[in-house]
Length: 123
Image 1 (spheres, rainbow, N blue to C red):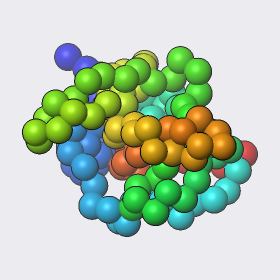
Image 2 (image 1 turned 30 degrees about the horizontal axis):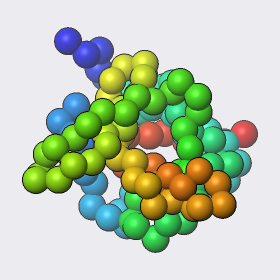
Image 3 (image 1 turned 180 degrees about the vertical axis):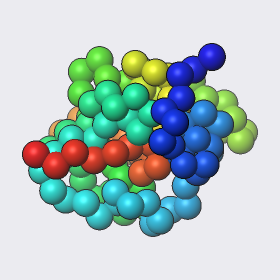
Image 4 (image 1 turned 90 degrees about the horizontal axis):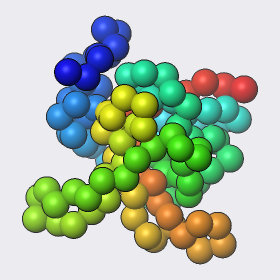
């Protein structure tokens, strides 16, 4: 059984443990542009730096890279698609998906992450 942060909302639990997706353009972290770190809402592991965040226009917070060793990637064949799921390497919580259509001048990756799966810590 996965250890669950007792402070999570019902919506956060649905995303983190049932692999739900928040509605596009609804996330609280979509327009945050401050300097800081994005951490797992369940276990508080640091996952993404604000240096990697960019506006992809997709409706969810997007990053061109995750911090080394912070996430794991899993094949996801749900909904009749083949995608790559992103989970927290520490607690296994679902964060979102990664796609190969990110900025070519950096990594070429777009980590499309649910705001509900993250908390932001300002530097």
